[in-house]
Image 1 (cartoon, helix red, strand yellow):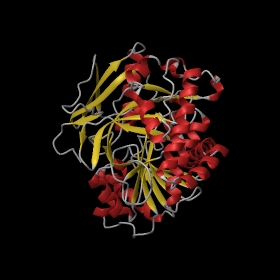
Image 2 (cartoon, rainbow, N blue to C red; image 1 turned 90 degrees about the vertical axis):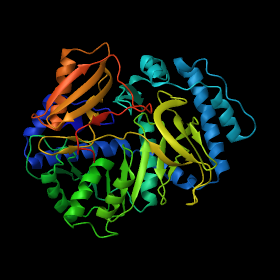
Image 3 (cartoon, rainbow, N blue to C red; image 1 turned 60 degrees about the vertical axis):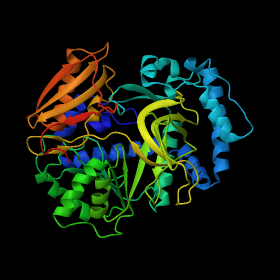
Length: 476
């Protein structure tokens, strides 16, 4: 059960345990999912989480001047911490206080060069705060939008703050902790060898029904509809690509949920496309509320009732490097600075995404920076010979410090070509493990060829596509 072994909070299960889980009866698998749900609940929803949630629910509608004052206070503390306790930032310029918070933030950040992922990757140890002992932080990996493996350091408090942002959004739309829900994310909760329903498992502690996103063939998708209708869930969370496939099955079978039965559908982790939003909202009878964040926990944006993405300004600062600009908006690469007291500060981090910031306040009334869109990860679907559509495969590259970059290519339904840029720790065992992990998700019938390269070519617009399919008719 890989989601127990490689969760986003730093667990590290080994493949033999995956095999044990796959061999167990489904009721026992449900109990293991329940145990994992209990662990996650204890890890995320701490005393610090509840304190932040209460404070941030009160501050969300405060005037913009207060938001900037709060950011300025946090930025000064972050820079002091970084100068004194983080080797990489020991020569960081002191903050520039102009007497006005917004201008002070702008002038202070202007004097700090952007942080590139390549620099962080090469000098990761230099970013770790000397205040922390090894027991005070966890280590995780992220592939990022560019497929680049980065080692990320996290603390219990920073994880709690990340979920406080998430739950501030959810509670504002009538959802609360303890409500039953449906989840369509990347956990490997159904063995890939399973060919018949149920393609879902239960987490009884969190009242969560987890659906496999790796079994979504046209034949299997019809089996997802009944449990959705039978559920007492009050909301849904998941990847837009997976929810879109399920929505198509619901619409085509004439079995959309009645409007108002669910309070909301919360999407994250992928760019939400317009056609996905339309079909998901039609099928589930509920509005989509999107969430933009990063594995690095340096930025968070949550959507309002108008679909605009608002920067959660207590959590971080977001800048735009202008690439295009009109009287109404400015568009360009994002530089993000995580506030608070992160175990490995990242100041003006070039995260790899492009955003469109509106210049006027949002009509919803919430003060602060607001974005029309964020161009993050937009991938093709991989299509297996059995017809399963898999919209996200980056999980196989998480935890892989032996691979610098990766890209999956599909030019025929029976095969994948995987380009990898190896690091110093790459070996023949690395290659075998990668093939095995891919087979777990796409099936053993798929031929997989690994090609080691010095670099991976970008698209004409400079963007990196983690999955590219050139098979006619496979683009969704």
